Structures are given as structure tokens and as C-alpha cells.
Length: 181
Image 1 (tube, rainbow, N blue to C red):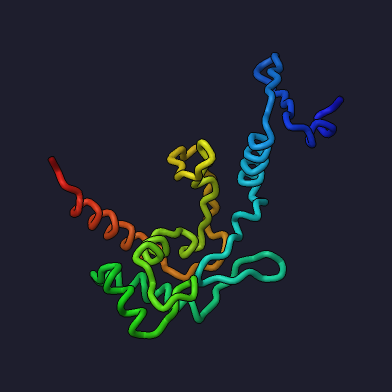
Image 2: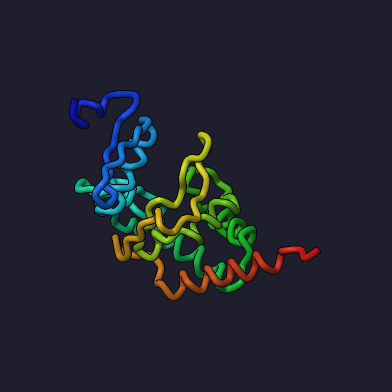
């Protein structure tokens, strides 16, 4: 039986060549999926790279394009944060302007604004493999080797200088809230 016939099995065997020796590994279905995702990340063919976020739409060919109506709001959020506004103040300003959140609610949560401010997609980049599943729970991955960064993957909404300045400001504000004991 070859590997193609094993793909539907609960377990799959993978032969890896180490030097002159072959090591056979038994992979569960979830491990097979993980290996497949990693390969698609490294080849740049992953559909995950074109996951839509606020400010973008997907073309019929699967490319991310800027959605101007929302892009203006994303830019506003970045500018206000860099100018010193808190997440709460930005949320209140968006409510005053009657701009609904990405989920359609009247109020923008601080968490939504924080995630927008941290999302590298707004400078046109994509980082694949930022999360992994551990014990059935999706958690942030800090293993840089398992991540693939695709620079200039799609049009940027935010200039890199503004994005970097916001990341520094976020880090500065989070450090100022840390209590030293």
C-alpha cells in the first residue's frame, strides 16, 4: 500500500529521510492536516493568506483588495491611537460618528480595536502559523520557525511607519500598566 492509499486512514505513515536512513512516522489525521497546512504556508499557496479582515474584500480570483469605506475607519483608528487616544476614547468616538463595528454592533469593543492595531495585514503583510492547537485549544504560537511571513502580499491600508509607531506605543502603554512587585 502506498501513501496515496493511506490518506483516508485514521493514521498515515510518513517516511522521512535523515541522512541515509528512512524513519517512518505514524501521523494522526490532525497531524496530517498540520503538515499540509505547513507545506501550503511555505509554498505561499495557502488560502489562509487571503483571510478577509475589516477594511478588505476578496476578489473573485481570491486576492485581497482594499475596501475604501472601511479602510478610512482603520486609518482613523491607527491615527487616533498614535495621537494618544485610548482604546476607550477611540471606541466612544466611533460610536459618536455612528460607525458600526465589524460585527454590526453600535459599540466597538476595546478588544476589536486592539486587534486591528496589532494586525500586520494592514501594512500588506501576512504571517501564517501565528496560532497552533494545543489540547484542542487554539493558542498563540511563539515559535518563529513555524511561522511564514509573506511581505507585501496585498495592498496596504496603513503605512509601515505608522504601523511601527503604533506597535511601539502599544508596547509602551502595556509596560506602563505592569505592576512591579
